[in-house]
Image (cartoon, rainbow, N blue to C red):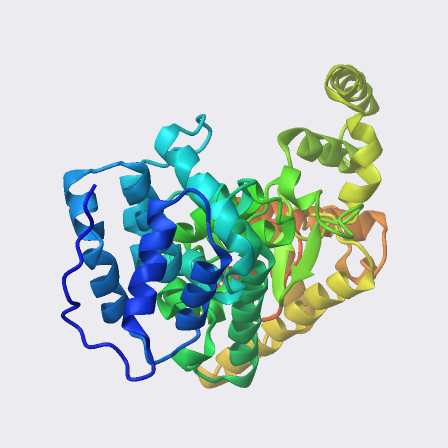
Length: 450
């Protein structure tokens, strides 16, 4: 095939040997045997900040790139040319993947094989940061759930044995971590991240940045669902902490199979990663086990025995689930068991705040303040434990009154927030959703005007 050798429309930078660049591109596209000197010319030019994207486009179009894309010309020469263009000009990556019809999971066709062989021959001499830029440039497209850019196609680029982009894998991961740390630090400092501070295209984090105060709040259940594609990408790359991070961001929960691959996940249902609280999914059977453990206080022993036999059968056929009960008891995220004094102490503080707020409201309405004991009784009425729980005996430790009070909070949360399972933790957090709703209900019991 004859190459196009017309003069570039964009003037070459003063310090660039235009003919040497043209010769290097022609040498790389026209021969399956790569000459190191040609790769060095390209690598040196990539380091030259005077060479613009427009100039590179002119060089590649001069060799037929634009025509090959438009007319779907798949000669080995054009495959090598378009592959090299994707390496050199990051914004052409999307076009490269579409043109080459990359479909991960399928055996590479002849064109893809040519591309991979070429990539393997040039990758050792290319700057890793430039290769990483190509991958990062398509992340905004991944957020859009493009049919061309999928988690699998990016994995193909980063994990294929012969891929040029495999050489930049760690650089890519490090850049993602760098940007996420920038975001959480900006939240702490209450600053705005300048776009040129990020390693990735700022569009990648625009949605995350705009909602970061909700995402990083322990009591918010905000979801940025578009980042589910990132969760799947890092799951496919076996980068499980990053996968868990984006599952939490996009779904407000981390699947059990991902969470259990995290460091220090044994016997934990809550972990922290880059300042984000990761909450593990609790399975249906685990919840049954959890109920069984606490129903011993309020359910006849015969029922407990029957349920125990039932769960033993399930454990035998589906795995030894009861071994996980001790770990489940330690969860204070998506279960209603309070573990340790800190969580129950928060509940007591929240109730004390409710009492203070109610008395302030009564004072504002020129009413006689209701005494603490009566307000506590109204709280018990709202929680439906007025007849069998002595709140003053509920201490920051395990005990019948404590457990039953916690269980009542859990049931109250289920009834008030049926579509937000993450609120079902048996804890009343000062100024939290449960505290606000409970205070409102108690005021109604006391017939206070809002």
